[in-house]
Image (cartoon, rainbow, N blue to C red; front, side):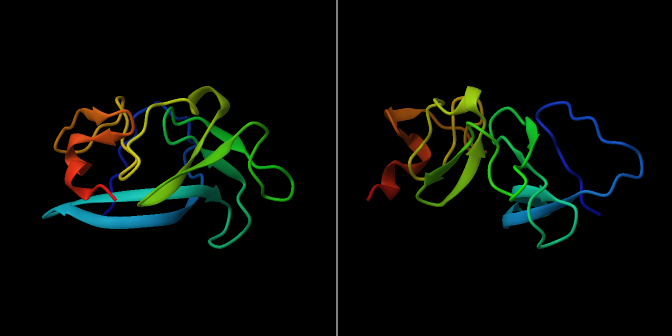
Length: 125
């Protein structure tokens, strides 16, 4: 059984089939898993039908060729990347783990530099 915890309200239809392209999955603590998704597709491995903003949860359809919607960006950090809608691209992020003020590390963190959180301070490159 997988429980999906959403930070924002999303409207899904009963019986709707949604597939997420999984970017990473790992066990944070025994029995508690973190799943990061890259996009939403109608079939696993198909071109994306839409993209979900990592920050606000907004879901927008992809362009006809599967590329990002107008104004969206793929935001990269040392441990990976995610997508941001036009309204959320200026969010302060940790350059190592990608956390933000609104979505801090699971054990909590604070800013030690403009783009580095306290949880990643020892991981500086």
